[in-house]
Image (cartoon, helix red, strand yellow):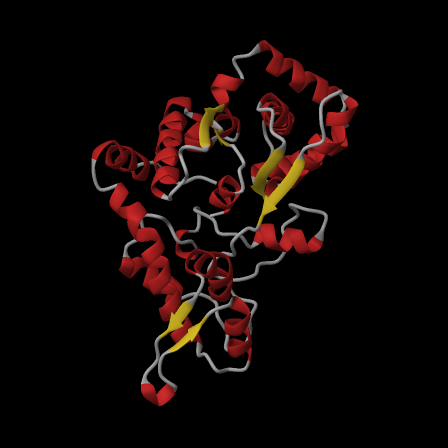
Length: 306
């Protein structure tokens, strides 16, 4: 949805398919051919999700990296980055310092920073967990005679098990909690996938952390960041003896009612499951035939890695 917000505002969006980064991070067992196939799958996901293809350009990292000037940028950025900072930046790979085993992984943050200038990006739109690479770009850009990009860090959706203790991804404690608590494909019971059936979505949401009157939960978060942004309203269906159907036109109205106990967790969960299914249904249908189906069949046979 953020992608569409930006394109509607007149932004030309370069959607980066980071195949070589997946290789460095040992995704798909470090098999570059499999990673490339997964990249093709992700392009279909974005298309099915409603990406405005008139204003979205799909760019492969391997194509950008074939340019000699790209590697010059990587070296220039490396020469302007301390070893200590490089160590701290390795968390953008979704791993803590103790998990790093290969020298190749140190290329990752330098390359990601170089991408911004190789792509001629005025705006860096990535998740909060990628903030460190973007901040380095803002610092080294002017030093190297380039520019200072604008950073738009999107919110990380909470996993269905709720808030987790910080794991050391960020020095800022609040940001660290958000990154540590995000949805993870390696914990499928805590995440909603674009291929989940109506039944799977409902089962996961019903099992989600959602204490009564406590707004710090993933179910309300999905209302705020997904449902209200998509539909602009949300209907909660309840038996007449419990107040009957009620409709909210802003997230603040819903949150206030939930805090007061006017909306029960079970009723909220049922409403969220129904709306999430409506959002995901077009994507599921896109992958039922043709090239998209073949790509999905390939991806679901692969082992899930971090």
